[in-house]
Image (cartoon, rainbow, N blue to C red):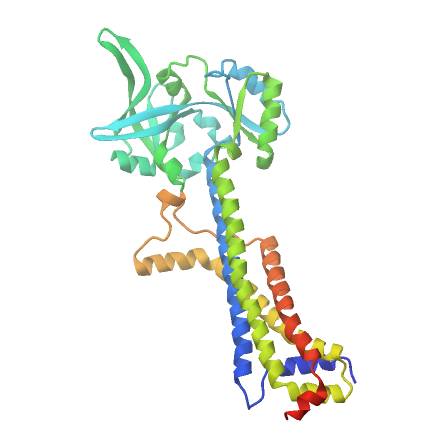
Length: 415
């Protein structure tokens, strides 16, 4: 007999005869269930990947890869430290900054912020703040004019727009005959930005470096250096290398440390979601057991006839393994195709549903972003497809083994 007949019979058994169409229906349900499980798993992991990527890009778009600060407050000889940092071939940019807490007041509206002083002409080498400007421009932050740029959510909170004024109050006070008074300075709002990340849009205000240094009375010193590297993922190691070149007593930080718990929570969530949704795929895969058991029961007479015609138990085993493998392959490929298609169009689908239902699925105050990005990663697709197929293969073994053990005489006696 032609060795390919196992494939022919296995594929033929997936379509039950006219006497019992229910078997064919169960086969279709097994394929659909497996496809849905794979689809959901790909979509969920893609959303997690997209969320992590989007948050990382938005964070790096508003902050430096790393910072070098003085051991106890300001960085005194920042020009010398900057020259040493730029001498490192891996450093792409190093600019001074001043940063501290402040309170902004407009009438009865009060909000605590991070007040950052920077050099507008060099900011493009460190962040994409200029690209996020909704009105005004960073070049308006000229020293001595006391202009300020606010995040969009912060401007709404303070009820101000371009041309309005806010009062900045800092904790370092002035000593007067009536006691210590908080230090205050009136700023004119010259611009508003929207980074698309609530943490910055609500909590960051930007002024010129000289104005910030004068407000905090730093003189010619700064809070530190903001440093960007050619490879963002090498920042933790490279910033330490720069600090050792500058001197021993310097404090360093990088983007991974500032948001370490956040990114760690994303990785843990991805792992937990993968394990939970794999159980969904496993349930769908184990439906193959019931499908093949019913097919084996229906085909007892056919199995006995094949055995009497010379088919070995191994041939019978291969016939039913073919059935399970086809269900697994078709269901997995269908799930992968639909999952990738859904993930690539998920953001648009969510926006349409939000407009139809007049509600927001993603609260920017909770999730830092206001949309639902998705990013399909090939490694995840291979891992999901491989896991689904392995589960299907395992589910196929028991029914196939039972079919191979069928005794021809015993099966034909009941026909």
